[in-house]
Every structure is written in C-alpha cells, then in structure tokens.
Image (cartoon, rainbow, N blue to C red):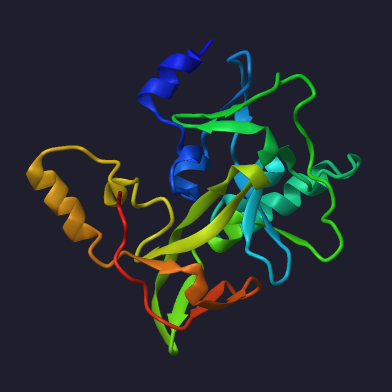
Length: 238
C-alpha cells in the first residue's frame, strides 16, 4: 500500500502548479484509490472539444481500447481491428474505461483519486450535444506547420489546471523533432545531474519550443496537422 503523505512530500501536487505536461506527468502513470490501492494505468487522456471553447482534458482513459490505438503505425491499427473483432459479442468493446477528472485530487509520482476503486471504472459515455470527444494520443505526433513550413511535431501538451471546473485546459504545445516521449522531462527542469550531462541534454533539445494554443489557427484531426500563425517560442522548463 502506498504512503500518500510521503508521496505528497516528495512529489508536490502538480494540480496546484501553473501547468503540467500530458505525456510526461499523466500518461502511463498508475492510478491509486483513496485506500492506496492500484486502480489502473492512465493509457490515454480524454480531450473535450466543445467547438469554440478551449480544448480541455476531462477524463483519464484506461484499458485495451485506450492503449491499443497508441501503438504506432499500421501495426496499432491492425491490432485494434483484430481486438474488436475477437470480442464482437461484447457491446462497447471499442470504448475505453474512464475516470472523470472531477475524481482526481493529486498528480505526483502517480495519480490519486478521492474514492475507492470498487465500481470506479466504467465505459466512456457518449459526448454531450455539440461536443466531440478526442484523445490526447491523436494530438501527440501531429506535424506543426507555420506559413507552409513544417517546424516540427507535437512532442507533448502543456495543460493548465482548472480544479474548480474539473478540467485541464490545453495551454500550449511542446514542439520539436523526434517522437512524443523522447524528451523524458530533461528539457523541462525534471533533470538534476552533472553540469556536462545537463549541457548535453540542453544541446540535444535545442530545437524544442513551446507554441501557445492562442497561436494555433486550426487542428486537422484527420490529417494529423496543426496550423499556427507564429513559430514556437522558447520552452519554459520551470
């Protein structure tokens, strides 16, 4: 059983900070219930697109229906189709399990919810009228284009906690070369090591920048493309 008090001392609650990063601080973290028991892993994040309103993370997604699509390339799509076909007798098999963000009260080395795990996980419900439900993994890896020029890919998504609204609003995109998950937090102040290693990490990620969502003019979810009216600025690694 995990010691909640110890975790809070070693890993302050990121929900009380100005921002946290989706891939670095949420995806693949363990979810722990109010008794300190493991519930699941965070396999993906639910993004609510209200059409004109800020994009926001509103839930944690878990289970094969959330994890399998994250597998890269054609293999991931093939596995998802086969997994659904093998369980055709089970209704809603393609829907992931979901935990509403309103139940999350701490994000540190793991994600903690304020209730017990019995009966906690349930299938993701349909979207409300006028709302589209998307997934964080669909945004990660998208090409970022400014003035017709590709300036990199979405490596992570910076989120602004809005606890009173039970939402994490998409604040900015971390853009650079490579693939999502390749940064490991070294570029964002999560690395404390020898000076030489720190400078090497800084050089390796010299092309990584931060693109505010207010600069994003469109997101083409079907063609994996983000259009912006300005290039990414320096990355705030605090």
